[in-house]
Each structure stands twice: as structure tokens, then as C-alpha cells.
Image (tube, rainbow, N blue to C red; front, side, top):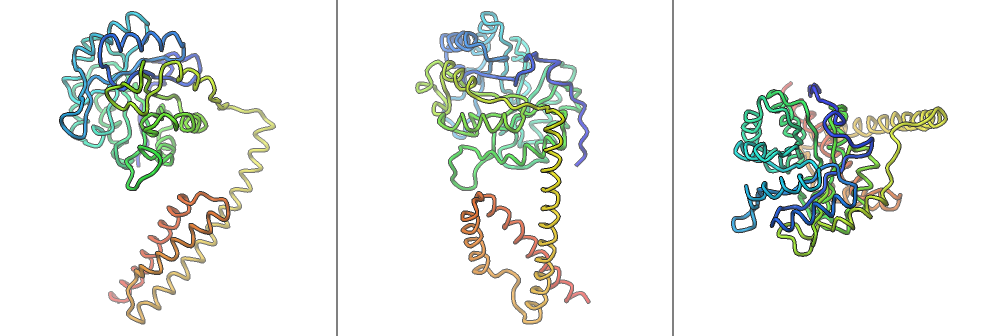
Length: 365
């Protein structure tokens, strides 16, 4: 994948004083009173660099609260006037962009449901031509890195250089404790491809419940993200949308003060010790690859044996037994079961591929 984005450093469009960026505010702008009270309580806590609020809410089914639209922009403009906090909102079509600019919104973000559709993203990019405004892009609903990258490329094509990524997690194929599975590896890979692109974590949408906010926020900081976008409401239990994942401005302030911000830089002694430990990891990785190569050599022989005996490649009962056994072994070794399960799924897929190659080679000679 071509890693080529011309991105303006985040500190050139928002001054955080060297601290992680904090974007805070309610999931939805519900009433003028709610917006102004929440905004002023956020301001009083002193942690936020930008205020967020939902103006238009894309809902799965009609009949749910879908946002207040343009009147909410008027309330947000007043909140900005009272607090001095810049504003960030989600936009999903060119009309949203036009209205956001009309009311002085400072930062736009593209939601997960929009990122998934290249046609919608292109419409937004076309509407932003000639506009100098930061645009943040949430990861698509499903774990598709190419879609996420493609959204940035479309915006870059429109001349937008103040860009940032929001990692809000991905839809779950099975039930987990999170509303949206973090799948940290997706964000790490995005950072590897585009190290200059600011990465902002969204623990609210990952969590789905406020009890998980602390652990997810700490993980985000441990991975050296550039900031977080977190939902806060004056009275979370009475919020019109996503009540269970919001906290009061004061609770959020307490949580943020308890989080540990890791150092991005380190001294010479640390560097030497780090190099020694990394050398050990490199050696272990080489051993792992040698073991995998040995395993795959046996897999090829297994494929030849199945071919000679005219037996199908996929033996489902065997795979189920392996899956259960490796997960049990992982638990006994102190490894995360989910990690080992995913690892052996990949190994099994590669084993199937190699055996299939052996089968096909026998029919084309």
C-alpha cells in the first residue's frame, strides 16, 4: 500500500501545549440549555482543547433520535462564544459541510458509516475543495484498512492537508465486552503506514459503557496516540443517545487526571536496555519463523498424503479439535486466548492454502 500523505502536523492547527489532544462533549446536542451547561462545565474542568457534539445522528432504524440539525449549530456557536473552545462535529453530506462552515465550526469529522462508502467520501471531498479546515476520519465500521486509507486519499486529492484519524473500534462478529472491538492492530498498521497522521482514540464508542472508559483510555495513551475524543454530558443517564457510554464533565476530568501519559522519548541508558531486549525478541522471532517453516513443510507432506489417498483438504473435526486445544494451552501459558485463536486461524488458513496448492499441482502436471 502506498504510504504517501502530505499532512500538516496537528500542533500547527490546534495548540495542546504538548499534551494529548482532548475533544469532549455530548453525543448529541439536545437542547440549548444542555449544550451550554455541558460546555461551561467542560471549560471549568480545563482539560478540553475542542468541544464536540452530534448535530446529525445517523441511526440504524428510522424513528430514533436523529439530531436537531441547524438549531443545534446555533447553540454550539453560542457555546463557543461563551467558552472559547473550538467546535467539532460530524458531517455526512455536502449540505452538512455548508452549514458547519456557516456557523463557524472549526473541525469536521467523517463518521464510521460514511467512511465505509467511497461515493459519500468523494462527495464530501468535492465539497471541501478550497476549504482550509481540519478533517478527522473515523475508521470504517468493518476492519477494512484500504477503505480507511482511501478516505484520506480522497480528501488529500481535494487539497485537505489538516487530517487526522479517529480509531473508534470495529463492529463485532461475535459478542464481546466492547460495543466495538478495538482491534488495535488496525490502528498500529495505520500508524506504520502514515506515521505523520495524528491518531485519536475514541474510547466511548469502543466501550459502549462508561465502566470500560478508564482501561481503554489508558491503553490508548500507552500506545502513544495523539489524543482522545470522549463523550460527556451534563446528565448522562438522561441523554437522548448513547447514554450508557457518557460521563459527566467532572467524572471525565477525574478520570483524565488519573491516567498516566507515557514518555515518547527516553535517555541513553533506557535505549541500551531497550536494544538488548529487542535483540532477544529478534532472536525469538527468528526461531518462531523457523518453527513455522518446519510446520509448513510437514503440512505440504500432509497435503501430498491426502492427495494420494484422495482425501479432502479441509477436515473440520480436526480443525475444531486444534482450535479448542490451542486455546486451552494458551490459557495455561498465560496467553490471551483470543490472540492464540486468531493466530491459529491464520496458520490454519495458510495450511489449507499450501495443501490446496499440492492438490492443484497434481492435476496440472
